Amino acid sequence: MRLKKRSSANMTDLVIIESYRQNLEDKVAQRTVQLATANQEITRLNEQLKSENLRMRAELEVSRQLQQMLLPQEEELKQIKDLEIAGFMQPADEVGGDYYDVLQQNGRIVCGIGDVTGHGLESGVLAIMVQAAVRALLANNETEPVNFLSALNQTVYGNVQRMKSEKNLTFALLEYRENTLYLTGQHEQMIVVRQGGRVEQIDTLDLGFPIGLEEDITHLIAQIQLPLNPADIVILYTDGITEAENLEKKQYGLERLCDVASRNWQRSAEDIKQAIVDNVQQYIGEQKIFDDMTLLIIKRK
Image (tube, rainbow, N blue to C red; front, side, top):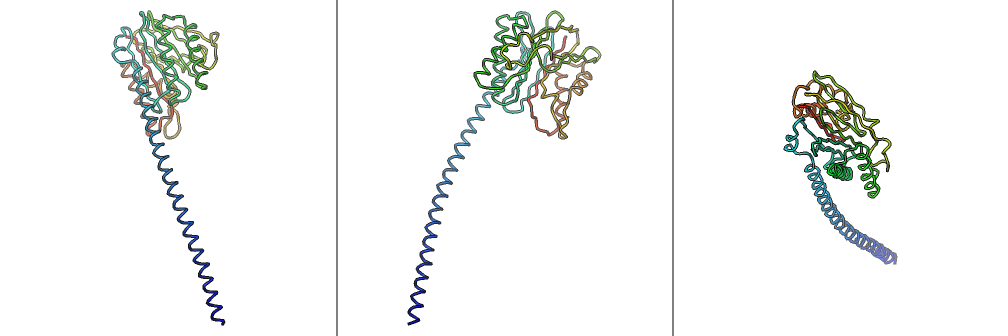
């Protein structure tokens, strides 16, 4: 009788164990299906992300090429009789927020340089807007500096508001005519290297206000003029040059830039540009570039 009870108990245990086993197998199978479904979804999302990344890279590449195409071409610069001009631009991302241009319009030689806050696609779009607006103003023979910068500011401000962006830019406009430079707008200090390598630093703080930050900056715009003699050099740049850091997090600095320019004052504009670029790159070494770098060298023939 006891054997029958024990046998019955064993059978009950076996049934319970089998039930647990079957339940566990069912859960494992169910979980396997869930994991397979999740894996399929992850694969689909990865493919979608890859496709989106490819599309975004393609769009950035188009924007980068457009920005490069709008830079002054060597053939244009060679047509300027009185000046040697050489430019350099290296964005931190595929698309940079720096701007520079050189225009010859009705006997006027005008150089513009700007630095949009930040870098990347949005900053690059704003830089292209500025380039188009500056060219339009010059094509309409706008020569008065207050009117010029005021109109440029209102155009950029309106677009920035429409974009719901907080971007703005420092901007300087330099015009050369009859041995004289006319400088307008707030940007980095302009460097002038005279014969013999003597360096002058021209502060632009009181010549304007960041473009696109306020709707009306008319009362903040001013202009200065200074002579440009044969062999004199003007250097315009963005802070990506002076604030470039080496591996020790030390900045390149304005003093080093002035020193290189002074030591190379007898060379051509192209050679001076290359000497500065090489010196900056040697200084930062393998450090990543964190900001767009732009350099414009103007030398009186």
